[in-house]
Image (cartoon, rainbow, N blue to C red; front, top):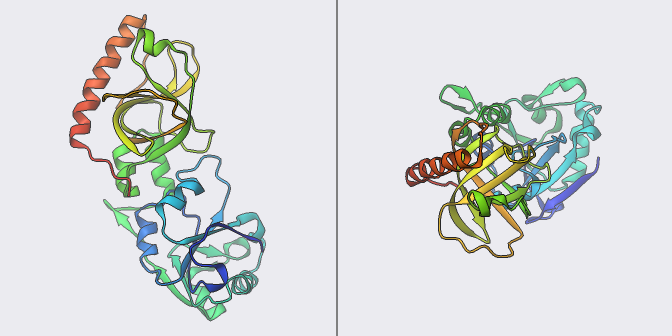
Length: 287
């Protein structure tokens, strides 16, 4: 069983508390689980290789204040339950406590539950109960559905933070600054799950500075190419910036087709006004 280190505060052999799970998205239920971790604690991510992430590992390093380790799910999916727990004890030699979600399963064919761990391994185990919000169980799968449906405020509520994506700033068409409004174009390298195509009230972070913005996700009207681009609503001096992070706060509208650039620009200016009004009330939560 090969475990790789992503971020180290406490060395692997010195860890006493360990939380195990996929932890895709780092939502409110995960943070309820992390509260059970004490000194010399770490997190073991079971990597199921999602094509698009809610929070790639580089984001997890910024959000979490624990040592983070990764284990490829393919390495353990055929292991028997007792075999997995023996391997875990060999990897984490000072391990005293495991923290698991109520729905944690392990062993071949998911034969064992979180409630079997202490009995089989002898390791003290804290099983964190189901975490609900608005009568719904908080899960990454549900948050993914909210994002795909453009329900940004719901997704943010369940995450406990404003959903964001980070990307390299790339050259766009150059049409915006000449004919429409200037935008920053981002390439997220297919790392993130992007929300539903549409226009959003957003906050854009560049070089640690936050700017109110309106962002577009989808197929551009002008060249029929996919783009993620953001227009800064405040005074902004464009320099040779390399990357930006966009925080999604609210969905404004579906993408539309326009007969000409004049109609498109008129709608963009309406979007800017609506986004400005929303951003006066909606607060960014970076966690």
